[in-house]
Image (cartoon, rainbow, N blue to C red; front, side):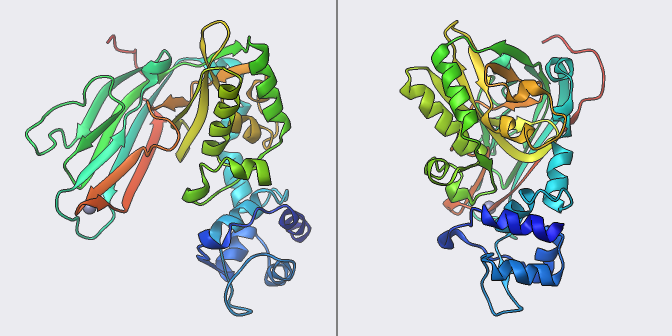
Length: 342
Ligand SMILES: [Zn+2]
């Protein structure tokens, strides 16, 4: 079963282009990701699974293996199971997707080098649920002082915080509520329906290709960033004000998500989430509102930043240049208590 599914998946695999390949996975790890035996792996190689190295000692790109497993339809591979697990919230009732929610958000960025270079700066995006009816409480930034004599909290309403330090942490309680509305503009509804009919495939892509709208048109594959850019472009071409937005999703760790905010004919700003619609089709029993192109659904799990696609949510610089950084994102349900007044 697994072998048949993987062979079928290989036929539609978008192979990571040569100039972006990592070939970071050996045969043993490849078998684990694909959930297959040695003979099946060899058969996949015979049928064109990209690899480098000598026969029997090949190396593979981890993104190819992830994407192949995810769309193999076996239901048993690690990527499929991880996906289904992190998307299980999509089966929630509409009430549960819209109800007020409080979450503890913890963001960290730190220099990845053994020894951080001179003149370090670290940056983190701030949660901005206030952009859509939510609020932030208990915001802390560590270090509180940026070392240059400026102190205290990031300026209220700012989109990010910067410190002259090798690392930075932001913690906050984030209050969100969902919203469901119908799309009023016929042009907007037509664009949303056209996009849904493209039946794009979300895939893991190298960072350099994540914003690449051309891959949508030529290969039908998208990241949440490129899908959002494309959708915003379609809106702009039709004269509908639209911007991309990046942020986090409660329950989906370490994923920086992207969606589109459009201004509808009634003047209201509405969220269209092109990738959640695709995802929801991959999990059984998901709430149908998530993939109704006539509905703008902003779930209470969406935590926006003030930033658009293409901007980093975390960055570290030292010795005068951008430097590799370790970033972590933790979002957990906040301890239950009455919401504090602002
Ligand atoms: Zn550093």
